[in-house]
Length: 349
Image (tube, rainbow, N blue to C red; front, side, top):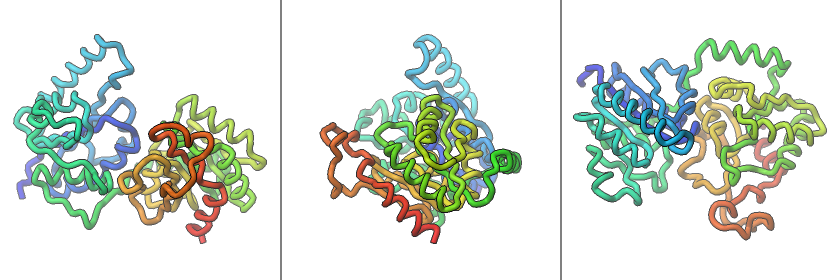
């Protein structure tokens, strides 16, 4: 095998949870090329979960298209394209289907590149921008789809031993120990991450309250977590105000990598279809994920230690959302708090 320092670019312009699902790609690239240099291209702020990973050389950031004025966006995009062009990559993997990905792939020059075979991207302007096209997930997991992009570039991929472990530095471990000490969390605790970036993936606040009160009365320290957004912190504060028992509200107080370490040492966690579920899988935690509109076969946490409650289409549509169109009618209202309590009981017993 040629152990030359092959240079890889993995480009994924989506959300934090999607970034977690690329970690097995790093392991497979390193298995093929132990000395590979791996760069990531992600949206601003979404690469934080990779900061502790020593296998990553550099994390490049792209602007969200809708979050900057047109002129500033063009200037930054040109600067980014020039940086990509001068980086002399040997391989480029483009995991999302924005048209800017095609332009970025063309900037890599002689590099072997792979793009997604998307139903809306059948024209030559897309297909001809890449050396190879790999299929969308279909009924496979997104992790398997991501790995198939490496197969399209003629790398060997071991689908029977997918390594999805997240790297957590000693500094992060120590900071979480201090957090646990400062908030008197102790050892018998669970983590609830009751927020998702998309409203259609939310569960009822009242149900979270019932679950929190139940496990608090069972002797668990219940820790709630969220991102730094004001809307998420406010949501957690509202849940806390409704509880009859005390909890530890860490809304906005942890980084994603700290959250991963916190979940790792918990007795269990409960989360929605969000980054927290994927973090739980990546650290080998036990837990429960609640799914509504997302396809479970594509997006479930990659772990046998995490249960999933999902809509089977046998449940009745609720009165609040059943009349709505599209994904909004696939709400989580059909999941009762007792069902969640029972499922966690199976996990911890």
